[in-house]
Length: 142
Ligand SMILES: [Cu+2]
Image (tube, rainbow, N blue to C red; front, side):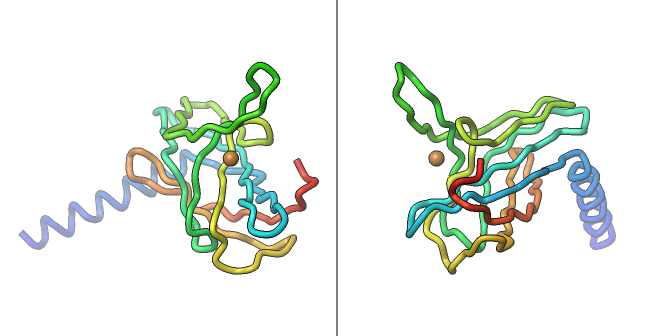
């Protein structure tokens, strides 16, 4: 029984490591805003696998709350909407960027200066997670 359990665990680990190799985050940057305003997280997420993946959120030791948002302009008015999930089809890249999808990082737990590295873990519907290192950039950056 014990042996069987070990076998299952090994299989599980092997499976998740393999699945992780199918995801690639690039160009991860954290746009700081003055004072206690939230920071915006931008990156490009590519699904190099053969199955669709669904990004369901993110968390970070540096910010108590991380949400997924989407900016939109409707009738000339800019607004942000909370997004529950973002699906990435096999071979597709989703761009988190100014004016579209972004992470909104709130309740900073420590000071963050330009050039600092901030760890953020992206979470997916199938239970896997992808650690990504973001670099803090100026509010003027895109
Ligand atoms: Cu936002």
